[in-house]
Amino acid sequence: MMIARGGSVTYSLEHVKEVQHLTTLVDAISRDLTEIRHLLNVYDDAVTMPGRTPDVDADGTGRKADSGPSRPTERTALDEARVALQQELDTGVAHLTRARAYVLGTTAAMDRALALWEGEEPDLSTGESPCSSSLDRSVRPTNGAT
Image (cartoon, rainbow, N blue to C red; front, top):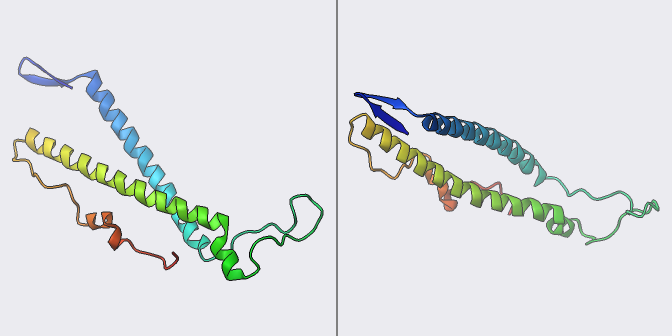
């Protein structure tokens, strides 16, 4: 919050806290997105590998694990771990698509407020950037594994 005093504007402690908090959030989100990018690289490798299966039964008898479909294609398609990977990938796409929309809206609103503060006519665009078409799922790149 800004407080006008004697013709000058000073910033309140609350304003400084809000800027610091927003900066901390942006830094944390940047780190989180770096981690997601790393996970995506691992996910990309995982879809081309066979699912992991235990070498022996859980009871420790030393018998080979032989449950599940006997044909490798079916075993790959029905693998619970692979299904879980796909479900989390789908969830991630949905959540990050919404998050990006929020970020674009926040960026546009902050930009308009700054333009107004600078005495300019605010741009009333939707806040879309040149790469905003990636919000459209029909343009989403695929890795061929569905």
